[in-house]
Image 1: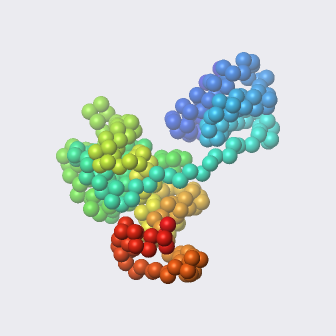
Image 2: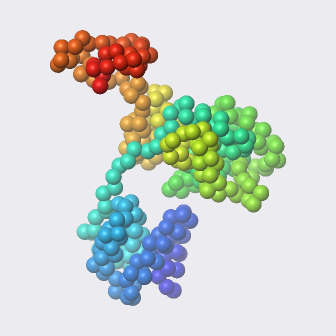
Image 3: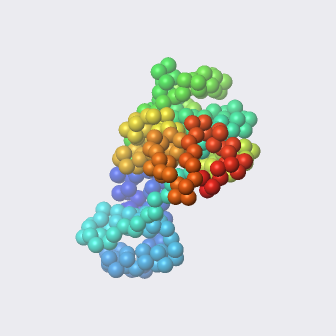
Length: 305
């Protein structure tokens, strides 16, 4: 049995998702093409050289880490060479702030969608913080409309979790089920060709964002980011949001605290309590509209620029 078949069998035995398996196999095939030798003769130097080649090609830290993880799996669990990875470190990955829509943009986005089913799909993703794969894998038997919740089955990491169903969407979901004569084991959303693809959702959002004149890069996961950020703005705790998103660590959820609009942050800068160095009079506004009016008109402009 060749190395690819052994890799597949071990990954399937460990219940790796089809997407993870496909990604890992892509990495392994590239490595095998790079390293033309018998698998039992692979060395740590071969792996480091391969990763260095990727790095020289300006590949991202995430790409390097995925390749390293795939090679680590192959060496440790397929070829039984565990000691090779003790001194190979993962690449640093820059922490980027996710794309988040504000509440008004979410309304504009949804309102721009005319197709009833498409609109309901986008509402479900945002209102429950679902991943697109989780939405497309939902079955009627996973929903408890009476009690406003449902279950994600075999989500990321093969974990089940509970998700909320917005009270205002219950009737829409019920009408969709009745209209399409869906059975208990039917997928909630499908197409004439069968199960819908994630690409379809991406195209729906791309078209809707263009129609709503939203300049941000809108993709399905941006709605999940927006769901989490808006919950934090609504004073829900990080632990509440963590459980709804299915995050293993609260550190993953903490990024949404940094995305909260400044008007929801209760910390006042000490600069606001200091007399400006030019001797100008401090101006405090209880009404933000007055502040915005003065800024636009030029009054007190030097105090804010």
